[in-house]
Image (cartoon, rainbow, N blue to C red; front, side):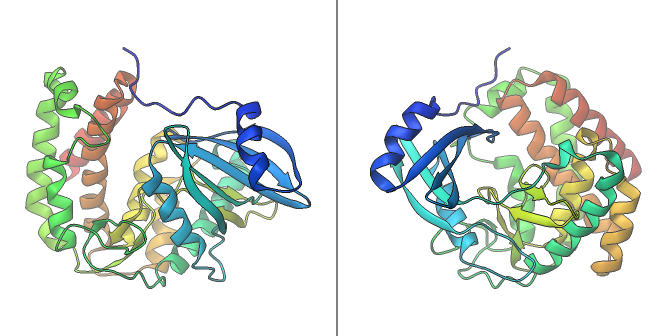
Length: 309
């Protein structure tokens, strides 16, 4: 089956024509590695390196603007210069930071990069997020819809289809996966009562959206479209849950480093709850995207988590 995830069909030449009226000394437009929902281009405006991204969801780029305004030591969020409408969607232009993707690092550097990433998460924990509510926050108010972190977590079973169109139909076409989905939701609803009433920033898509410098420091944290208002420990669960896609990540080492930095009551129990939530959400996304290989991987992970619980 073919994935239903779509990105705007923007070429470097088209991006150049779009950007030229907005920047006086534009030069060197090049296609970069984009995300699932956007296409990205690097370019220069005089001696200033910039990135332009084009996507379907302006609300994601508005959140980039908010994140770029935090400017905290140890949290390298690129500043945003412009956000607007383009090509039946939207665009954002931000400062360009340089570094390597985690997937491109040699195995010997990954442990050091993970230690640096956990230190970045310690800074993220200090961000004072305005607004109220829990779950996916919206810019500029930073309000989120759920009245508590618990209610956000257990609301995953009734996730809307605004972005993941017809995920329920796609899930129902895979009866074994659907049965696992409801079993995991039932267990999540029983365990999530332990979730703290904490409203901090959660990135919630971190492994693909940061850059690592030559000294293994984190040089950029970007793509805040999935960011949540809730418990920052969720980001640690995200890292260890996604380790199946990053074989150089040592799950036990990440948990050891994180527990030393965030020694909160019920650390391991909360990680399990958040991994359940991430797994259930992954089944929804992968069903929507018709990614049957991904569904096999996540199904095995969820079965292992449920057995351990």
